Length: 131
Image (cartoon, rainbow, N blue to C red; front, side):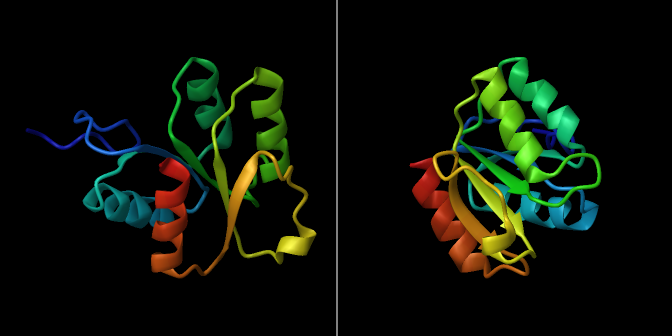
């Protein structure tokens, strides 16, 4: 079976689904590969508005991994757009910023991982959120 194209949902429905929304191409590719190896279905976006378009069109991942600082749209604006659209999906924020400087709604953001992140901690949190 051919591999799913980069950035598209996996064809097989094995494990929980994860949306990655981060402007760092290299990180998105590496994280996508790792999560697929761990059994997750992955859809990756380097442009926040494209991820929002997929979500507002009805795609519902089990978890969203969201970079907080992106050039097009910061994490708080992305989260506000989810709220306005009535999209209720657990979000894990990935950021190099100190958590106290992030303006995120606690009810929406279920986990925060600081970059550079510990891979085991990220996988543990992701497993908890996707359960």
